[in-house]
Length: 277
Length: 316
Image (cartoon, rainbow over all chains, first blue to last red; front, side, top):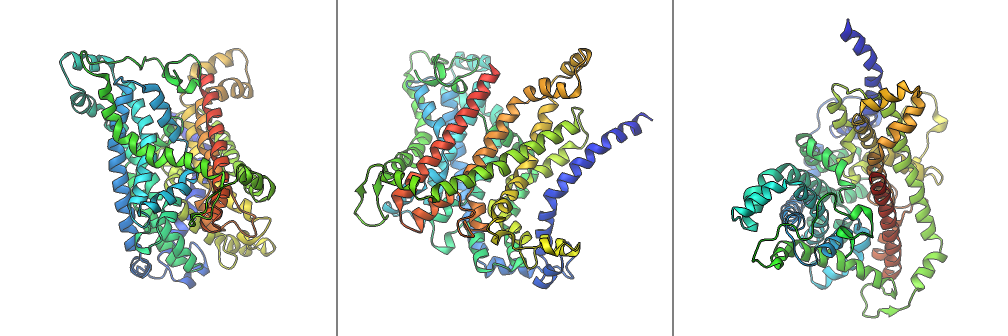
């Protein structure tokens, strides 16, 4: 009796949530189905099922549409940015959160400014700077600036974690004669894993989806990342929905997969990321 | 000293609870050793983020086409042009309209639904949360491709639907229409942001102590009053996250406009970031573009500082 009463009371809540969930999912479902259709099947209606699954849309995008090249670029850039900036952020976060050194406050403020800087603000001189160094049309032009920006946020994030680490633990380790380096990797690292995973999730997402920098820095087609590749692909095949849908799934697939696997860390990061200061 | 340990300065920059400066010194050891940990991250940040921002500001006082050696100092001429030529204000006004779609509508949807759903924990909420968050992780290019198809005048699902229910009159070229293109792109922003706001506020409401509501009920407060005096103040941290995230997103829109309309038709969906891109990389007016970038950055900074400061004050 009681449980049925409870379910009746909760039913409107589920209806509301379901309605808004459906609004999110219908466009995604439409693209998913279109990726397996022919153009004429697409025109018949968004949610009609395709007669056969046309995997050729994907192989088309992958080879003729050069998504294999874009995919390679995206992987190289994202892995490099995530690994390096997370490592650097752990070091800077440890420095600000645990150590004490001259000019600490001013340097912290200097880094804090960065997490509000949008790429639009720096992309113009950055392009000319990279051009003078001969680095435009290389992966370096995408990797180095994104590490710089990610380290700024990463420092704030990791400083927040290290500040909340138990002081008694730090004191005890220091008394036992731990060096700074041992303190970081032997004592604090095991505690840091959830915070680090959240940081990995956020930086992975931002780098994978980054658009403006990749658009500006790289003209060579083979070096384009997936989002830029898809944008130009759309310029060429404006109305060819099946191809565009297949391309979109190649771009979104990896990040959605990682999101489903590590959603806890993504959601925590997106909640906290905005005002972590 | 600025910031952290000082009495003055922005409250949100102050460390909470713990003394930072002077903490954990290794006896008989140089305090400068901390700089070794800082060096790699800080160096790359200074070279590729902080130095360029000063270069942007400096460039905004020059006239330059981007490739010739001829770079002319023209003082505030670029800023004067930007105030006079109309396209800058047009772009900024579109960003302000996007504030309604990116920020206001999602936050209103979020808070309304959160209050309808109430404070009781809901079994299976994790499932809905995962789904509602999904647009947040998608590339805006993918979102743009998706919605260009939905809005397609000939075979887009939106027009197909309108025709199938006999509303042929309403079917049109959504992204090609001078009046409708801007709201059509704006709606996409609402679609991306509302799930985030919903989940944020629902999670926030469940953290407010039940006792407060029971006490208010004893005092005879109605549900509207409870909303006004308990729920809304209890959600101030969530409001600040929601506002920062969505407002900054609205001011920075670029990918979506690039993919759906490229600022068109005419300049009806031109936004600040697209103006920067167009002036700098297509029209070779580097100085002018840098001036727009400087103004946009200042606006983003001011708004972020304002919201964070408000939030820090609220907490103390």
